[in-house]
Image (cartoon, rainbow, N blue to C red; front, side):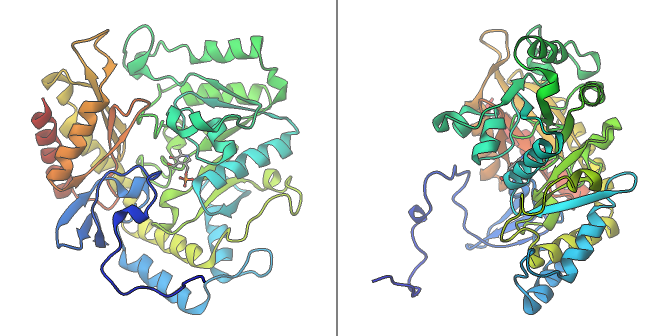
Length: 436
Ligand SMILES: Cc1ncc(COP(=O)(O)O)c(C=O)c1O
């Protein structure tokens, strides 16, 4: 018979969690506060993963916690097709004001992948066109449609073919890994535009393209910051052919790069913005922003979901926006990110194992290479892994990224302080030194 009772014994073994979850640490966490996580054995760790870019307001921000508790005590679930609720109405209105100009609206869902799915469905319905173009090295999720868009790492999609079709990929301008050699983004010679035009000449009629989806800064693909003219040029090309431009701001958005959305750095306004991660400080909420005249092309019932716009998540999201505004978190992201980059930049000259140091706001990366082989840019995932282990030993949590796992990415919460950044820079430098 099914046994629903809990067993008040010792904590179950870690093996109850399936091995499909790639595991960075074996830490068992009792609580979090600001930039810090506290383990059940009383150790304190500086969390510069932010739970993969989620805890922008820090762990358990008291205002977010209060909003969640107050809402949870009144209503846990008010289904979107059946009723309206105050938190949802207020949040939708507020989200519509995050983009420049009038007339924007929001559609809410639960995870990042689900919001990307929504963006693709909307683009196809609104344009009546089937094809989606994505960029090599991009990550958009783990559902069937979003795996088809993803090319950051073969492990994400390699075992799951066949994937939904009518998706084509073109190279992202990854200046450090350009075929003709690394160069600064300001003097970019990457041929992404020529490759896109070749795609149009050989395989894809641009009149059949519903949308181009792009991460303004590659996330899982290695925190690659594009050259200055990339997004403006892409905006021109998509407009010229009547395609929609979808900005996947799931990792770059909500203040992380020092602007509310990263596209603002280049003065670009996409047709659809996809958001998740930081929007509810850790509660599962995601969504898209689009002009109402586009959103309203979705026939009633053509999309939805049981939990989309959950009332507790909406309350958390509202409190998140309050905290971001009152504590100046977007400006802090820009300042702390610059401080981090300034503290780490010289590693490129100090150790030949560090091929590139780059970033935008609080998305900062070190790319590890094997200088003794090939063209001195051979990816070195082993070294990146060792650096993560050394940092963990020093009680600093970092993550990897990049197609080979050769990148160490640093993702502080947007509430991080100048003192914490000083500490993190010291620990990262020590960790790199310990492996070289
Ligand atoms: C840019 C980007 N898009 C989509 C996703 C998928 O989000 P989720 O894991 O919430 O489905 C992620 C997650 O890391 C992401 O970084």
